Length: 236
Image 1 (cartoon, rainbow, N blue to C red):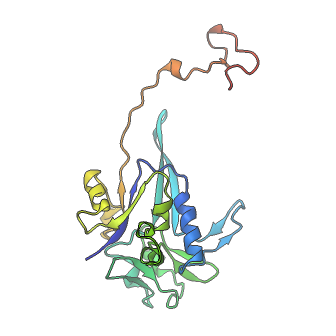
Image 2 (cartoon, rainbow, N blue to C red):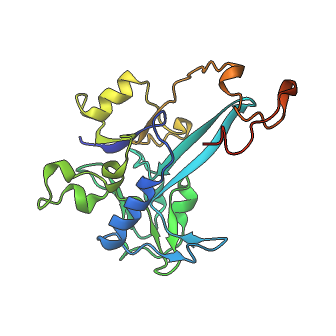
Image 3 (tube, helix red, strand yellow):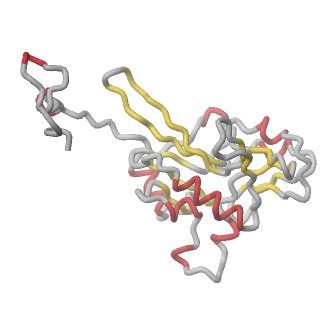
C-alpha cells in the first residue's frame, strides 16, 4: 500500500520560504485555490497557507543555533481529522495515503482543526471551509507535465534540496533511504497518528573560532589602546 510523504532535512533548510511562496502560487491557481490573503503587508497579516516555516533559536548563549522548521499537513497514516468530520469532508485516499478535504461537503465547523495535534488545518475566512496541504495532488498526477516535474511545488522550489518526496512504504524510495540513513523521525509520535511526513535531524557541528578571527580591522572600540583606522579602511 502506497503512502506518499515528504521528508524534510532540517540540517540544510535555510528558512528562505521558497516552499511557502511556491505552494501559495501553485495552489492559488490550481484546483485547491483560492488561498486568501488579507492585508498581506500589514502589521498583522492574515491569510490561508498550506505550508509555513517556523524559526527558533535553540541552545544557550553564546552556543545558540537558528533552526528553521517547515510544517504542513503530515498526511498521517491514522489521521485524527478524518473520523471527527461530521460530513465526511475530510478523507484519506486509499491509493496513495494523501489526506484531503472535499470543499463541497465541508461546513467549516473546525472539528478537524481541533482534532489535529499539529495545528495544520486552517479555515479560509472567505470560503468558510477548512484547507490544508494537498501534496499537490493535481500536479503529481498531471500526465501533461514531464515526469521530473510531477512533484509537489515546494519540493521543486527548494534551493537546497531540503525537501524529498516519495513513497515511505517503498523501501527503495529516496524518502525511505533518507529516513534509514539519517535517522529520520516523526513529529510527536506519542499521539499515535503515525505521521507520514518525516524530518531529518540537524547534525551537531562544533565551530572553532579564534578571537583574532573575529576582530574588526577598524578597531571601533579602541581595544588595547590602538587607534581606529581612519576613513573607510577596513569597512569594505
